Structure formats: structure tokens, C-alpha cells
Image (cartoon, rainbow, N blue to C red; front, side):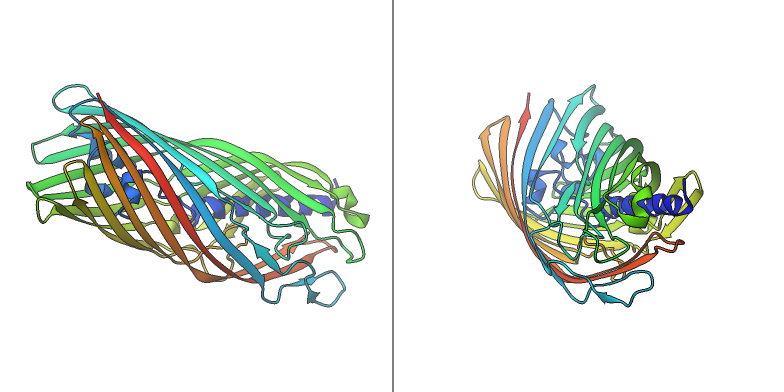
Length: 433
């Protein structure tokens, strides 16, 4: 293998894997793990009870009297745009020029469906066990082959499945404890274009990554009820160190770069963030319950990408920062069978302004939610919710060097303005037996 081919393989491996991990560990973490919770912007989940709150607190099922199952489905509808703001390319021996291509990307963030399931079963008067599935890191973005973002991103698909087993224990009438163990699967499929050595050649260079793997984490939690009207909750969900193993493919390169086409092994280690949450639910009147929660999310665990290949280990700093989300909401018992709720959440982005990728053009967000529960039967509750998400405008600034360390080194600077908003429509059911 030639020197240029080795350098290309290394660059492709870490470049594509970096994009995968930014997708999984950015603010495209999906909170939609409970329809009931969605209706109040997830302001009360750490202190609420039942299977629908398992993602936020493993102690939530300690008070389940009968076997309980929950299922929910969330339709995520995104409206997004990205506009060129002076992107450039510098080929070897040539002056820096404007990057050619389509300057406006319409709806690069694709819509999706997100399901969640769970169940809990009482073993004795003290112990309840649970099993739940969640999909905390899922997204798809797609740009046209002529987009100015093509060298950073064409198509990005990341899928995750988190399966959690839980044991909850009622220590006293006022205090519940819980612990959960998670097995989390990640699968990535990402593509982007590769620049040719000359602008006169067809723009056919492409690279792709497929990779997956199972890794493990844990969670702990507690709920305390100092009075009959007040419930307090606290939980901690661990970070998960993932190893994505897969194959990087290179195709369509011409002229001096043609020998670099082929398939190469690649592996990257990344760490998803820990989450520490505290919150409470206060029944201020027989019909009205106030909810509030604060979560500290340890995005700084994603400090770097560590890529292993035959030539050694490459460390790529990321610069993510820890953030704090705040949510408040209210539940109102309109009638014995109908509960209404609403909530708002402030969720800042952990991504740095310099280095933000087109794969996940994230910004600070505000979430506004409303929802309802209808008790169809004493043991059957139907939940619905609707959420509007307002993304603050963000700047995409991505500088990359392709074929680094060779005579073909080509630098690209992607600069764009991104805007967006989203709507989440949710429906689910809770059944006890």
C-alpha cells in the first residue's frame, strides 16, 4: 500500500467515525422515552412512579402494586435549513476558492418514529423488577450530492437500542431505591464526498462507514416522600464507553488518488455522557400538581475521539461542555378520568461553536409541551402529547484536511448558518393486570 493510501485510509477512518460520535453524543440525544413525560416537557419524571418513568429513575417502579406494561410511539417532525456562509476549498498548489455546489440545504434533518416499551412485575412486598427498552441516540440527516456540505456529510444514520433490567426496593413507606443495568447497541452508517485532486475531474469521490457494537452501563435512583403531597427524586445514569467496529469504504477517486479506492478496517472509542437529575412533584391542591427538575449532563466525557488502526492511535479533541437543563410543568386533574398537563424545558447545546458539523447542526433549544391522559378503564390509561421545539440559530464551522501528510493534502472550510424547529406527536398506553 502506498504512503498516500495509508494516509487516506487513516484520514477516512477517523473523519467518518468522528462524525458518527458527534451524532450520538450531541444534543440529538432523544428524551422521548415516555408519552406521559412528553406532555409536561419531562419536568416530573425523576419523581413520578410507574414503568413510564423508568428511563429517568429506576426507583420509579418500587410502588407498583400489580404487573404493569407501557408502550409509546413518538413521531418526530423536523423543519430545518442550512445556508452557505462563505465555504472554501484549497487544493494542493492552488489558490483558495469558493466551494462550488448548492448553497441552500432544505430539511437535512429527516423525520422519524421512536418507540419505547417497558414492564414491571412485583416479586414480593418489597421488591419489583422491570425491563424496558429505549432508543436514546437515533437520527438521520441527508444532504444532496451537490450540497456545499457534501465533503462533511451526505447521509448520516445512527441507531441505538438500550435494554435495561431494573430492580427496585421499598426500603420504608417513604423511601424507594432502584438500580438498573443497561446493554446498549449502536449502529452507524455514514457517507460523505471526497474532493478530487483537480476541480476539472468529476466530483465522484465517496467514503462510507458501517460500524456497530454492544456496550454496557448502569443507573441508580431514589424517591422520597416526606409528606403525602410531596415526592422528591434523584437519579444518576452512567456514561457508556462505546467501541464502534466497522469498515470504511473509499470509491470514485480518480487520477493520482485512484489507487486509494478500497475498503479498510476502522475502530473508534467514544463515551456517551452521564446524566444526574433531581426533581420533585408537589400536589398543591387535590387537582393540581406542580413538577420541576434539573439535570446536569456530563457531555465533557466526550472529550476526544480515540481511533485505533494499524498505524497506531489517533486522538481528536472535541471540546464538548457539560450543560444543565431545567424543566417545569403542571398536571391538572380535570375530571376523575381526564388529566391535562403542560410544561416547558430549557436545553442548551453542548457543542462548541467552532467545529460544529453539518451532520448535527445543533443549537440551544426551548421545548414547549402539552398532553393528556384518559383513564379508559381502571387498569388502562391512554396518553397523548404534543411538543414544539424551537432551535436557536447556529453556526456550522467545520475545517478538515483530506489526505493529510501527502502531496495531495486538500483543505475544506465549511461555513453555514443553520435554523430549525420541530414538532413531536406522541401516543401511548399503560396497562396493569
